[in-house]
Structures are given as structure tokens and as C-alpha cells.
Amino acid sequence: MTAPLTIAGRELRSRLLLGTGGFDRLQTLGEAIDACECELVTVAMRRVDAAARGSVLDVIAACGVDVLPNTAGCFTARDAVLTAQLAREALQTDWVKLEVIGDERTLLPDAPELLVAAEQLVDDGFVVLPYTNDDPVLARRLEDAGCAAVMPLGSPIGSGMGIANPANLTLIVERAGVPVILDAGVGTASDAALAMELGCDGVLCASAISRAADPVAMAHAIRHGVRAGVLARGAGRISRRTHARASSPVQGVAEFAE
Amino acid sequence: MIYVNGDPTEAGDAPTIDDVLRSVDIDPQSAGIAVAVDAEVARRGVWSTRIVCDGARVEIVRAVQGG
Image (cartoon, rainbow over all chains, first blue to last red):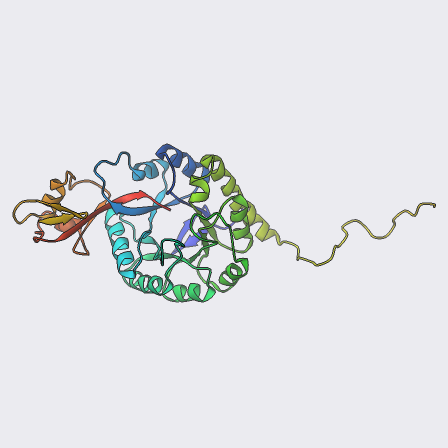
């Protein structure tokens, strides 16, 4: 057994969080939520579309999981703060996955705006989970600002490139006093396992699951990847060596006649 | 004229937020929606009484799928 993930005093049995974006059908989303065995799933806030059919909230409620609104699509601290406040009003949660994006091409966080938004939201009573760069200094600044967790990217959103800078991620983990949740970049189960092996406390996946050829099967795979990574981290991997080291005895090797 | 989610909308004289919502076929009792008027959140408790000024920009949002 492994200890639960605790964020802002709340225990989560699952260390996998699911982003609900990218699923073609709500039914598949529901099946993927079940397959992930997650407890928190993200949603975005957008203008009401009177023509829209079906509600992601109905699916989430039917699965018995809780919603974590994000501020995706915001490019300024002002817009992110307002979006979080709207989400709190609409969804009755003061938890927010804070995203402040620098540009549409990379979808990388805008660090100065992110920090300003984090400070304002913490002051406003939010439990802030910021999507951040794989920058140990920024992660520390966000923690100092009162964020309940930090969510560094492995690589750009939706890229599936995995963990581009494991050294930086390790530095973030080593220094963090709040949970570290890998957010963005996971492409497959081994990426999630690596995140946990490096010491992350959790993984958030969206595209890796929703855009897989078989999203529900990938949800199962990534859940097991997270689990495998946790177990491997706890087991203590061997050190990397430059040269080989035999595992069979070096003594007692038979010497055969010429 | 009031701008609702970017679209110019006629919602009558001195409309409340409830009136504005109804003018775009949204039931004010709907769960899971939130409203900002001129970039400030309008709490649900004031929707039935707060008058929306001419020229105001009203944003009505709800949760959608998102990562």
C-alpha cells in the first residue's frame, strides 16, 4: 500500500488526475474516469452555448468524482483570476487549476502573470494548483505564494513528448514542500511511471488518454503506470553505472579443457 | 443594448441579470452557470435584483470539457 496523496488537507486515494478535454464522446469520458479510478477531473470554463447537448458535469457526477476547474485559455492574471472566481460561483469549489498561458503556439506558462494570479487567488481563499514550467525557482516562488501544490509540465500541453527535463523535475521534487503533480506532456504509461519514479506525488493526464486510439485502454494503462512508478520509487532503483556488473557469481566458473 | 457573450442583445428596459439570462433562453435557475458583468463576478444572489446598465458586457459561462 502507498500513502494517499494529500492536497490542502484533502486525502486523495488516486494519484492520477484526469483532464476531461479531448474526448470525442461523453460516454467514453465516463468510461475513462472509471478506468482511471481518479477522484478529481478538470474542466474548463467557457461561454454558455444554448445549442450544446449533454453536460460534462452530469457525467462527472454520475462517476462520483469531483471537479477541478481550470483557467485554460487565459493569457493574463486578471483573466485567470476572474475565470477562477466564475468557476467558484458556478461549481461551488474553491479549488482551481491555475493556467496562465504565454502564447498559443507553445501553450507554455507566462511565469510573471502566473505568479501574480497565484498570489491574488491565494489571498482570495482559493486552493491553487498552478500549471507551471519545469523551473525549480518558479516552483518555489509559487509554493512561497501559498499554492497548495505545484504542477510542472513534462513537456508542452498535448505534445506527448513525456518528461523533457527529468533533472529539473527532480530538483523541483527535492525542494518542494507541497505535492508535485506532473501536468502536461505525458504521452503514454511509461511517462507517468517515470514521473512517479522521479518522486512526483501525482500525474495529471488529458490528451494522452482522451486522444489515444483506445482512450479507456490507455486510462487503464496509465493508472497502472502511476502505480508501477510509485512502487518502483519505494523499492529503490539501482544506481546507474558506466560499466557492467555481473549478477552471476564470478567465482567457480568451470574451466574446460582445450 | 447589452452585450451578452459578445453578442448585442435587447433585454428590455432596466433589465435584471435574470432578465438578461432569459433574453438568451437561459433559465436563471440552471445549475453550473456563472455570470460576470463588466469583468466582475455577479453572485447568484443578486441576479434577480441587480440592474444591468445599457452597454454592459455580460459573460455567462459554464463548465465544459477541458484538460
